[in-house]
Length: 404
Ligand SMILES: *Cc1c(COP(=O)(O)O)cnc(C)c1O
Image 1 (cartoon, rainbow, N blue to C red):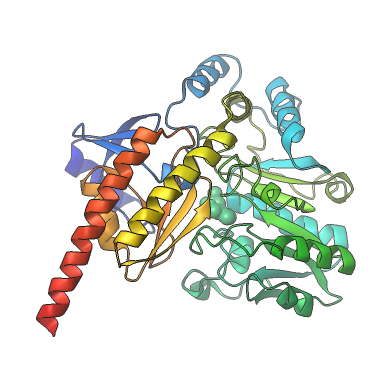
Image 2: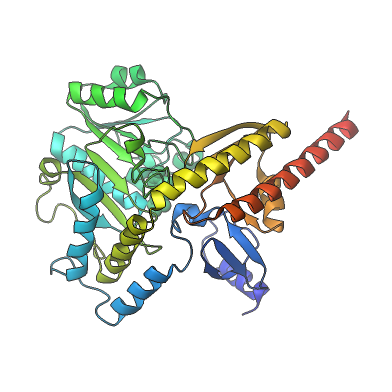
């Protein structure tokens, strides 16, 4: 199929639920992607954070090649060497006390498990989430997601969900009742606009949950795997939840969801009360082993801290130069640029110049590059952003002169 045929086929045969960009990608390596015409792009989206190791990392490729010749699929009613190896490697690095996991296939599924677990472990039903939160789009996860445009067409959702204002521990304290099972928080809100909490917020929420005997769930689907300079984002503030939800990059690009909890909590789920057919498939676990090895051996969390700091300093310079930039936010390689206007024009212009970016709401550009991005590549991205922010500013200025 040629470029046009590919786009037409996808558009006509797949549900039109993705906001599509007119690009066909056929291969990738490291932080780079190439479209069907051979044009090269620096990938600062990494498929919403999935490609944290970059594209086709040699260790992932090798692990997949080897495992496809061993065993691809095996239901969790049998034991498997790769599954055991993966979960051991994972539990070796999870925050202290989080030692028992359920494996699934996506971020939303990791949330579904956390919801059921919170109900089962506490015998209560209510869950408190925050305004601006994103937890996925299956019905349970969607009930916790804030944006009305995602939720409203699908009501009624699951009952007993409350959304409170973010970044204010008192709002959480006030919302807790004797029906409350859990509080769920993204340590940094991704989809919600790369919102970093005030310094003592997570610590205070932890204290409130402990005091009120309510479970604390962190949704680290986007913030973990070294992205914020620590293996898990909550480690930036030394706060440990009772349940942590993981997904996007943990299997080197293959589908995975992981819910990790304290042993006493996870043990409340009995045989048959939760399961999924693909849970911990050997192929995914082999990729997961290689992904975790690479994360540790290549010090990618440190790399995210160092290169993230460099990236943010450069973005701060752009912010002081371009008036359309309102604020630069983020930690490590989870960065956001809030503009005074809609970000669509800037994202499309950057794309034309070979830099892929995504949004995080209407006015925020989200930057989630692979953790292996080099400083030279960051410099290229900064130069492109400098140009396109300038162009956008000029267009805005001249169109407002005309309309005046
Ligand atoms: C992406 C994301 C999800 C949902 O993950 P899916 O794999 O798309 O279901 C949940 N929570 C957060 C914080 C996310 O970024």
